[in-house]
Length: 141
Image (cartoon, rainbow, N blue to C red; front, side):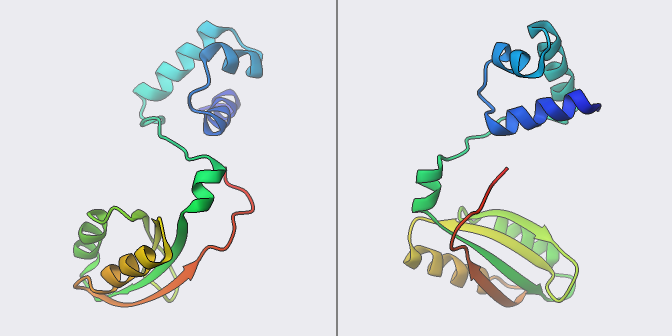
């Protein structure tokens, strides 16, 4: 992957539905070149798919939180499987430091966020959680 591919990916992060012609204009390339690069990035697995990104207004209506988890020894796979089934858990990452995992969680209301956090804490293998509600997003790439 070269610098041009990186710039193409950056443009797609801004708007994954941007027409190829628009991407080509923004990058100073031909439409054919952009189509070829997109196809190559898709074939190689760099681009795994295209996703819906909510508007800032819609995202602002939802409650977002980070839930830090301490997991019992040898329970990471079971905890991961359980959290994968929870619709409110958008991302789960293993991390270094005093916690084992961080879950990015979203819910339509505070009460529903409370329920999701309680559900995470009740998962077999979760020893302890620490939650932080997101107050505002300064930027999101």
